[in-house]
Length: 397
Image (cartoon, rainbow, N blue to C red; front, side):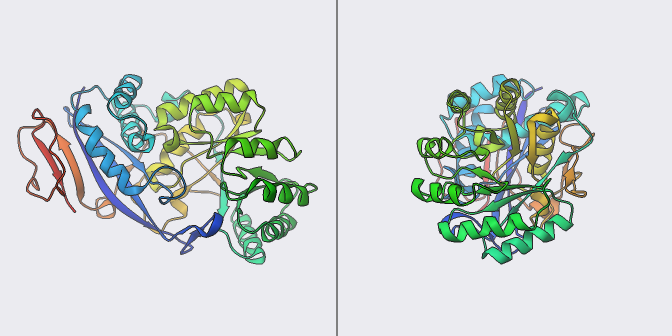
């Protein structure tokens, strides 16, 4: 089996709540997601999705995905999509860094592997643990009483894990944490996620002010060293996210006792293959995880569900269902939340089928077929054409 074509769709994902707000005034109302298809010479197609959380959250942005695909994808034609480790080595050899660009291709190849073997990705990743995966709800940054009301609303819908978006004014954040914790049951979990938004001294003020509450502190500061300093001066359970983007950083943080929980975001590592490596290392080290991504729709949610559901339950702190945050459904067969839980599909691959009307037209593709694509005369924005052995590259703008 060989890769014969790689193509991309641009999908807008408006939010159910209108706007998603996190640290220092950052916000998004419509997410820009890229759905990627990888087609083989046998006609089998696998799908993946990647959706950065705007351009200021991590070193990733939506247009960068599609620019990166133009650089990367032509080199993958003719490769075996089922040899996933080998494919990742090849991607790294032709595009240094930019893991988010590689993510959707890697996910699509896992989907292909499942379809080719007749097995769900969850099974291929080690097996299914438990009946379902517990979810958290991210609570967008608002005044304290409004955030508390949102926590109560989603608790009534079955959620028992909450990620409170803080990282603004320290005094307001202290009030936000107190207000949210007051309305929760003792068995509920509350995570105060600053998304790198506090300076070190502000973070220390916050953790001291809430030290008597049952609350987790997540990624308080921008740098690893700042976060480590806060961690070493609080007894509250501690999570790292943005700083943990490789196995090397994961091992360093474990050596430094820098966290109790780590967030494994699929696109931060470069796809399911490397996210699984990080997951398996955490399982071996005894580190609990939140398994998720930066954002996405139904295809991303399906990928999250398969990685999470194949993770031993004691190491699975929580996960998320991004498709419930969006007003647009871009695929059928994706997990749907039930009382704060979701399940990975038991169908082959990811178990999802893109909805043609939702994902829209192909905006870019490359193939090694001799027959030109139907829109081969579309504009190319002055982009250089791929190597001569590639016969078809098209882009719609």
